[in-house]
Structure formats: structure tokens, C-alpha cells
Length: 41
Image (cartoon, rainbow, N blue to C red; front, side, top):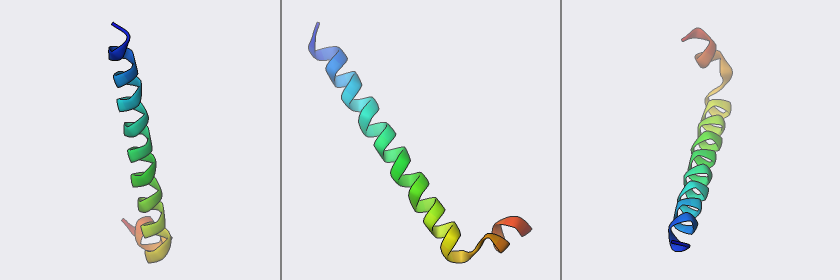
């Protein structure tokens, strides 16, 4: 079944891209608010 592996690869690719976007957004929010708040917590 050739279509199955392709769909799985596409799903994995989009999942990785989504996690990368979430990580970058979290890093940007941390840099905006400052590391002091993160260190105190």
C-alpha cells in the first residue's frame, strides 16, 4: 500500500513543523516577558 506511508510521512512532517512553530512562539514570548519571570518560577 504505497499511499499509506506517504500519508504517515506527511502527518509526521506537519506534526514536527507544528511543534517547531509552538516552540519558537514560546521562546519569543519568554524573550518578550524576560527570563527573570521564568527564573523566579
